[in-house]
Amino acid sequence: MSAVLVPRMTLADYLAWENEQPERHEFHRGEIFAMVGARRVHGRVVSNLNRRLAEALDGSFCQVFTEGMKVQIAEDTVLYPDLFVTCDRADLSTEMIFRAPLLVIEVLSPSTQAYNRSKKFALYRRIEALREYILVDPDTRRVEGFRRNEQSQWVLHDMSDGDTLEAASVGARIALAEVFDGVDPPPAAA
Image (cartoon, rainbow, N blue to C red; front, side, top):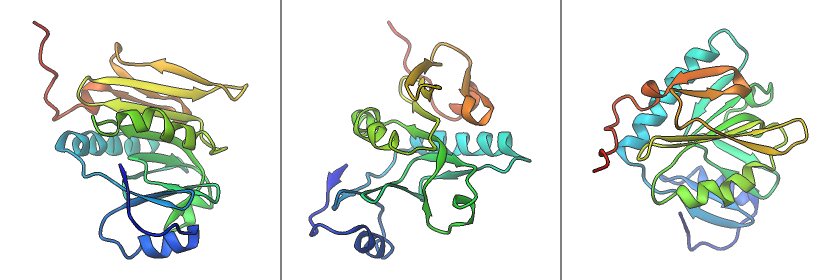
């Protein structure tokens, strides 16, 4: 993720500008950041998660959305999560800007891992409705979930050694074999 050389913008200016761009850009405190193109394994894992989450949410009021949808955080930040689930009535009637995801999932790559684990997670934690943040690493097959507890503290739930990704905030359980379906396993240790 790298800053784009454009003058600092207001949120309204960014939204008007972004809607005219062929690529996606995130916005934070007046600065614009270009989104990096994704690898095949990233797209495959996002597709697998989208399908399985949609199946798990069938019949509920909640919906899953993927990469091209904007999540606004306060008046100074707009991000593009890889996947998110919202059950918020206002979110489910918007065409463009979502504000109350319950669950956010980011699929890691070598170039985004540090950002997703630190700054992006810190920004997402500002969303009052957010209950769970899950990181999926297709290269190492690690799955780590952070869940907000009753005291509003974020607690790590490492699912890497199990067989299931559990998105407790929406009552979904997905076999890790399904999450990583179509992705080559990591090389065996020598």
